[in-house]
Image (cartoon, rainbow, N blue to C red; front, side):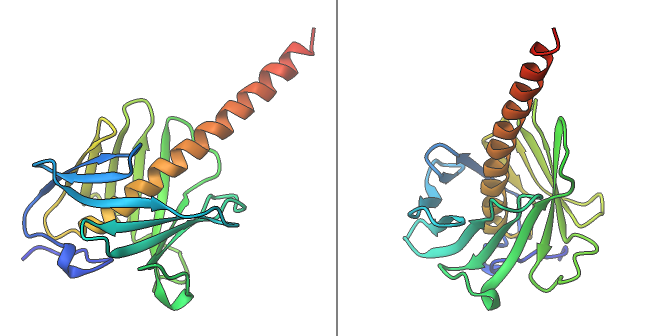
Length: 195
């Protein structure tokens, strides 16, 4: 058996490659036959944006908390509907504050308290809407997304983890796009005042 990458639950680790489609506007993930597998339900606004990922039976899988006040845009993911630190599964942050065409994210599992080396890393190519998820700093690919919707999860990789991670990537991409628009607007305004 190949290495198993279980983060949320081993029950989400299939022994074969799994094709999924994510509709980020609806917050729904479908299998290859178009059947819903997961969905995201927005909660009421809180200090930290909160999203809950449910399975197709309505069971809460994880809760995603996006901390807007951090420089690296950290997001934390907890079991079920919890936000208790003992239920933390993993956290995600941008690898650097300034990024251009490729957004790079570091993923740290809850037991990686030092965060010296990431447990997974994500490279999102903005112009192609493609994404690659790697195991740690290795060249081992655990999932890919192409065209912004089509996801390929490799064998023995926790597909609920990948879906939660890609929901975070989408949120961070939108936040980053807004920041870039503001930065461009400030730059053009400053350049306009030079004359």
